[in-house]
Amino acid sequence: MAAFFIASPTRISVNLTAMNLQDWGWSPFFADQFDAWQRHGYLPARVIRGEKNYFRVWTEKGELTVRFAGKMRHRAGGRGDLPVVGDWVAVEPQPDERGQIHALLERKSSFARNLPGRRKGKGGGRVEQQVIAANVDLVLIVCGLDRDYNLRRIERYLTLVGGSGAEAVVLLNKADLCDDPEKCLAEVREIAGDSPVHSCMAKQPEQLNFLFDYLQPGRTLALLGSSGVGKSTILNGLLGEERQKIGEVSDAVGKGRHTTTHRELFLLPEGGILMDNPGMRELHLWGEEEDLAESFTDIEELATGCKFSDCAHKTEPGCTVRAAVDDGRLSASRLKNYHKLKDELANLQRRR
Ligand SMILES: Nc1nc2c(ncn2[C@@H]2O[C@H](COP(=O)(O)OP(=O)(O)OP(=O)(O)O)[C@@H](O)[C@H]2O)c(=O)[nH]1
Ligand SMILES: [Mg+2]
Ligand SMILES: [Zn+2]
Image (cartoon, rainbow, N blue to C red):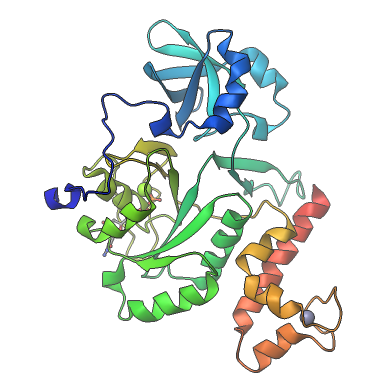
């Protein structure tokens, strides 16, 4: 493990005792917005963890436990206006390492999903946006090369990230459990567009060295993926210590046990910030149909040849997308998933 942290000359080490706001991602984008709050004596703070009734935030004066000012909850138009992990907020410091949040700064990026469980039954048909995390620069979409491996799910995650303003990298973890990781790599590269794809084995932290290329002081990365794919194992590997609890994967169903229950930001010893997330059970998209243009560039490109400019690539004559399926250039299940995600987004847009 020790060898893993011998920094190469290009790596910049962050002094963990003298952290500054930039290490936590503070930039002119947020500083410009903060002028108005500075006058009140408030501190800029980054939300690193959310509990039921309070948040942990990081400020220049260290970590604080904070709550919303009552006014703020009142002003918030919907859930989307309340802080989530990754947000920058204006905090009024109080004694005993406490404080109050007075304002939420505008986000550089955010992920939202359609809140699961609100689609059927009483109040069915209602849609509710849940912002999952904010101000993430790069998402590590983690997929296990065991029973978790699923190209269609990766497409769904790529669509989510495509609409968020963040970049995506796909990590195929547990390469040791797969007979032919190269084949999986090739398959995923085919559907991932410009997003880099790597296979790895998080159980051996020295195998994670390639991730240093994505780290940079002040840059925020987030781990996303199903339960049990190894997100927290990757985090621990990069931290160089077992800070997050690791869970077992059930033999019977091959799924994780939702070991991580809170989103949380961690400052990495070599610079950069990494968000660990709970495994997602269901991921209902929240976004626009246009988000698909990012995750399905191949289909969008093929579609420029269709006879009708509004071709749905279903039964229309002169469809170059379906022609590509017929002659094997495009996989039928990828097109099917494209239709499914497009319908889901169109449906959402109608109900909003
Ligand atoms: N074989 C193998 N197992 C791994 C690898 N990486 C992680 N695991 C195991 O996968 C299981 C789940 O790992 P976690 O890191 O807890 O997974 P997680 O994605 O954080 O799961 P949740 O917190 O539930 O969302 C643990 O038993 C790990 O030891 C790997 O590269 N190979
Ligand atoms: Mg975890
Ligand atoms: Zn068409």
